[in-house]
Length: 331
Image (cartoon, one colour):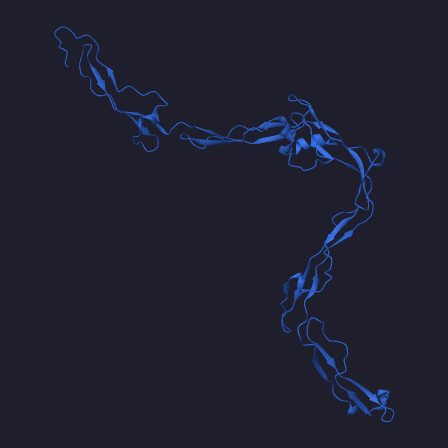
């Protein structure tokens, strides 16, 4: 005999994020003992059809959703990997949209967004600080460098000027052999523990190089000029450009811009000389009109705009030769 027990839960056909399905289990039973028997003893033609029904149709509760781990922040000496962790919720059974909720809406514990990685000792390596820096341990000096600090540190960097104020000089730095351990601490070792030769601990000082000024942007009335200021290091003819911070010890950085052609855009304009008031003698003169005019428009403007140059004369003597016999002076 074939007997069916409906609504007997089997495996869910979909993931828990979407509604599941229950399938009825069909088995062959012995009529007398009601125990399961081999299915070949039952009549296959009388086997019931497949029975399915929905189950767990209510929306799933909010849950934590995690992203992929990032790459490790360090290759050795302990680093960190990070990932995104968000509380998410699917609002309805038929929705493919996921909403991001507050962390308080999901059950604790929240998955960690960080974890340690590459927790093993690094090989000894040379520690090379920036040029012009040296390690120190003087709280007094550190306090002068950072007056805003509440408590001066016992491990500081001091800025070193060039060994000469002009004509060359060198910068120095302190090179140490160090090893980062698996617990994150740093161990200082003798130089013999580090591979190869120690990096250079001194180099020539950088110097400022200036390009010529560009043409003025205006011919009058105030314009501007620019130039390129470079910080260069190396011997003459083989120097290379470096970051401007390497030239801070050479003094104040030269300006890369300035104003030019500050004279007003005005000039003196004159008309032609008028006729002389006499044909001969010493009492003749002639005059002309003198005005201050704008260079571009030619319109008259106030004379103080032209006072940067002497004002041309508006009259002069003329025909100062003596009159001949019988010739009268015409006034």
